[in-house]
Amino acid sequence: MISVLHGENTVSSRNKLVELITLAKDRNKTIERLDAKNLNLGLLESKLIKQDLFGTEIIVVIEDLHSLPRSKNRTSLIELVSKSQVDVILWEKRTLTPAMRKKFPHADIFEFKLSSALFTWLDTLCGDGKNTKKQLLAFHKTLATEDPHLCFMMFTRQVRMLIQIQDGGVINGPPWMKNKLRKQSQTFNLNQLLTIHSQLLAMDLKQKTSTNTLELDQELDLLIMSL
Image (cartoon, rainbow, N blue to C red; front, side, top):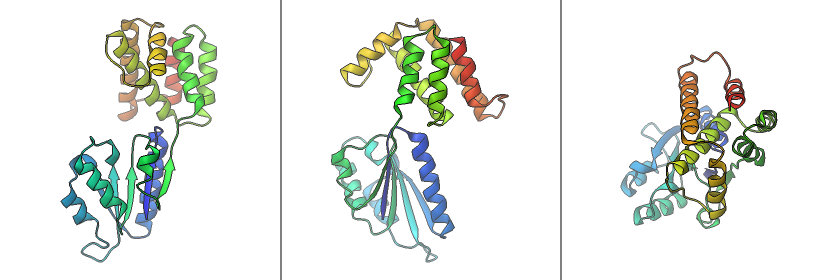
C-alpha cells in the first residue's frame, strides 16, 4: 500500500505521518526513512524489499520526492515507488498536481490544506495595521481550526516575503499573489519588518529551548498587540 501525504499544511501532514509511523511500529514493522535529496535508483531498489534481515515487514518513508528538480532520476524514482510491493509513505511539503497524483492510482492520498481563516488573519496583519482588535479576533478564529505552530510558521513566512519585497527581491508565484504582497508590504518599512522578524526568531528560540514562560499562542497575542 502506498500512502501520499501532501499539502501546504505541513503541521497537520506531519502529525498524520507520525500517526502512520506509530501505527506501523505498533504492528512490529520496521521503518526505513529516506530523504529524497540523497536517493538514487539503486539505493531505493535495495530498500524496497518486503522484509529485513530478521524477517520483519518494512515500511519505507520518503520525504520530498516531488520537490526534487525535474530529472530522469526523479522520474525513475517515482515510477519505482508506484510499482512497489512494499508499503511506502510519501510525505510532501508541497501540494501535488493532479498529474502527479495520477502516478499513484491505488494509493491512499491525503491532502492537507490551509484554512481560509488563516489567510484572513494574515491579511489583517498587513492590511489594517492599527486595528488590533480585528487582528486578535481573526487570530483566535484561526486557532479554532489550526495549530499555533502553523500560525507561527505562516506568519514568519509572510514577514520574510515582505522583507524580500522591501529589499527589492523577486517573489515566485502567480501575479495576483505578487500584487497582494506588494500592497501589504507598504504597511511597514524595512526596519519594522526586520524588527518583527527578530522577535519571531527570539520566540522560536525560546520555544525550542523550553525557556518560554508563555504558550506560543499567547506569545503571538503579545506580538500582534505590539504591531
